[in-house]
Length: 326
Image (cartoon, rainbow, N blue to C red; front, side, top):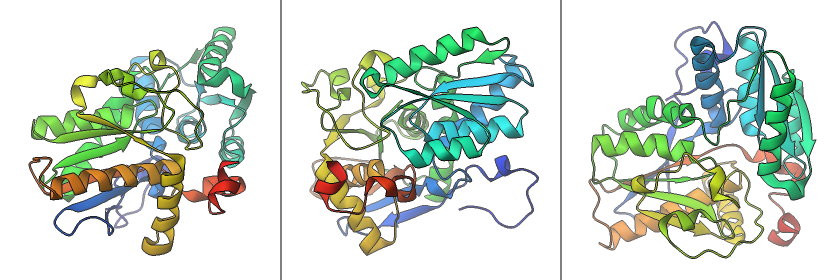
């Protein structure tokens, strides 16, 4: 649970220790819990890697104080890195594909970062390429590269995973989380498997994403509206370890949208579309446990709600599915 029993010297000390709250729509015999990452100061799970990765890179000498962090990002990572960079004496430049949330880009700029847009058609691969070009043009710059840097997954191995197990006294049967970079799931999964090798691990992707190919499953590539998870090019997802994953769960845009609206109306969770997808998959896994299809160490499923719906209000996230997805 987020701690409020002492004064903090920096906003970075407020990163992590987010609440773990039960999702009420699961089967009665299996508990579902969600880590509410919007309680971080930058309102997303990416605050964790912002603080952890920048501190480690400074310690290692990857960048010096007064240097620059350059990162390709859909937005939340930029916000997390911007908060950390400012507090730790660094400049920040972020390369963002045009189609991503206007709110996120406004927040990055408000935090003192420079935002450079790349064409939507170039995808995240184009943003990654541009970020490295910019870093080469600067004297002291580093590209943390959340898609390939092991520090991303290490963040969640060192923080998110232990927090979950502490809150549930180790009674975790399954871990189910969305995969964008895959750092969140990989870090938690590694911690979980060390605690109990029989822990079930499920990855979540939008329908139209290609993560399933990692497990040899056929996928038909298509555009999807869910933000922050999924991939159109598995070559960029270097952190994903198929050996740590039992299943990959595709979730359609309409099911994710239906669930995020239900979470708000029935449970008071104001979350984004990736959280809706994670909840759909977590409920599926919980039902399989309840039906005896999955044998897990405990009758519980833990997932992650990465951010808040407020990041997507300009995109009509609470309007009809047709208005949101159009």
